Length: 358
Ligand SMILES: *[C@@H]1O[C@H](CO)[C@@H](O)[C@H](O)[C@H]1NC(C)=O
Ligand SMILES: *[C@@H]1O[C@H](CO)[C@@H](O)[C@H](O)[C@H]1NC(C)=O
Ligand SMILES: *[C@@H]1O[C@H](CO)[C@@H](O)[C@H](O)[C@H]1NC(C)=O
Image (tube, rainbow, N blue to C red):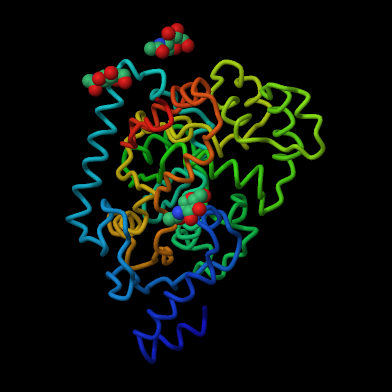
């Protein structure tokens, strides 16, 4: 990236074009970029990339504006999301799916930037590695995001990005009451597909426990025909995964054994307690470009850091993909899955996937 900065001095427009081109080099697939180690296109702190880019092709989705809207315009979107969230939190019929106690597990998910009074609840598969890097730089352990070694991003002992759980109860309460708090969510079923692909099919970071421990345990309990599982190399199927996820009672014991790995598929409610913690902003992965620039401004840090360029289209909801993954899975299993994840759909305004349920 450094050569870009020399060019920036010479010609800002050349920079914009290069940034646009580099998106395609640095990002390979939609599901990769949030967790991909290394090679991200970042801008140095102090540089703004937030202005609408006239060279950018307009997104096709009708609900996504073609340029980054002004803060005022996006503010009404953000406010409506928060209004919906608090209304759904009050719905007693959904209590079981929306209310949780703010446990150590949840405080472990929340990262703290004291210098700028920011709390960020981590939800995998929505580009959260980028946010962690932003906060690490803001906390001052590294001067800019390029200098953060990849192996330190997730090493919270050493990267100067503490978890909320490392504070005393009084310090936790103070921070929850007064800091800017945000999380990013995405369509709940697309998120599960993304987690499945990333952990059980591709597993790019080579985390062997998913294939070697978790997948066999799920197959043993949930695969219908055990003859099938005798076939050589038969890995976890999405169908097995769906059955496990929808089994509210049965999976409790397994989830305890799976430990922290379940963060990739437990509900957003269980990760971030959105009804108990009054988040300032809930970003949507589907509108990450608008949300990222809004969050930086609302948190008062847009002069200090910027969020990396997001390749056009990669965060868009893909119904064809969702239909493809769920085809051949029984309605009963899909309805159970929806029953389990309905809280996330409702709280964050994602439409129920009727095309799968009926
Ligand atoms: C609460 O949720 C239930 C179940 O989804 C729904 O039928 C009902 O309309 C909701 N109530 C309100 C006030 O939104
Ligand atoms: C909520 O959970 C409790 C205990 O698990 C259960 O008895 C109750 O029926 C559930 N209520 C709803 C509305 O699902
Ligand atoms: C949506 O997903 C399908 C199936 O995975 C894929 O073939 C298609 O290219 C995707 N569409 C977009 C716009 O990304």
